[in-house]
Image (cartoon, rainbow over all chains, first blue to last red):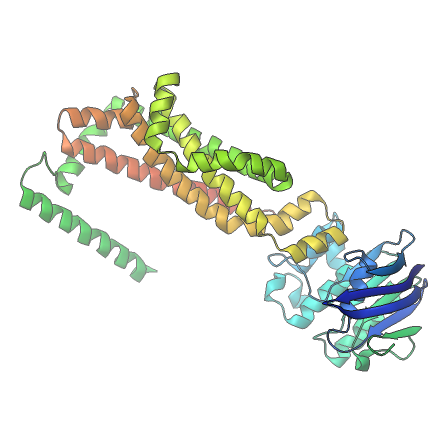
Length: 189
Length: 248
């Protein structure tokens, strides 16, 4: 379980996150939404430990994270399987490759990721975040650049892979699934 | 590709013609030997054992110094990138190695060490700062966002090197190796001339100068240029094979 207690984070004197309290429970699907610059990414980065809150407390209880950044952050000269191998320490290339076809087309598997479309790169970043068992998954705009059908498949994949773990996704309002446990609306708290 | 090769050959032929025309105009083979005389002098050197001993002697010292300097430059840069105090400590030394004239090094080394390992020491000191600075700059240019990703995914050192640092390093390191291998031959031969190291191309140059054999000076120079070119090509070939490999 991850707990945020009255967390505040300011940028340039303005609070983008103001006294936010939140509990991420195992098995729960959570979303954070809000306009551009409202602090969605900052919230995820605070939980990841990449930024410190100005006040308040974040208790992660030793949770380990599967993360998807706002940018793909893939290793450009390598194909999808090597991206998984290098980032996740998977020893066998066939094992890494087997994780991909569910979300990635066959003809994209062996190309360097630098030659793939934005949507394909996004899906590789999603697989990289989800493929290892983690207690919490933090996904920053996982459906960016995906068409409706791909986004639906990606959501189904997230649900299946994260079963039993907490998932917090930064999403645009229109992408929020109906059955989320809680939606955090920044700027609209 | 053929058109490109033809253009390059055409350019080389143009300058050879200029050289020949100048030699004809000067009409004094001591002041300026022409390309034909130079080729003849080279052919007269090729069958002699002394020439090949000189080629081997120079190559061993110059390439040895270049490889040692390059390897240590990369290693020190990796350590300096990791440990900032070491970077601060090494900065004046690298600055000095870069700025001190080769001739000063040669004379200092000649006084304290003698001439036999002079070229090795000089090429070592010339290559070291070039590779050190290029490696340090390449490591510093590694993408911060990828490094953040690596930290989140707890990527191992080997994976970080292969996936993040090497791609950032390769372009600068490639140029630095090409530059350093050329500089090594230039400075190494100069050291051999000043130190009159026996059994080296530099010494052959020195002897040819004493006897005013300008054609031989140019023939030895041509040999050194060819060896420098060959060294550069070989180093880059090995670097590319190594850098582009292991994608199983």
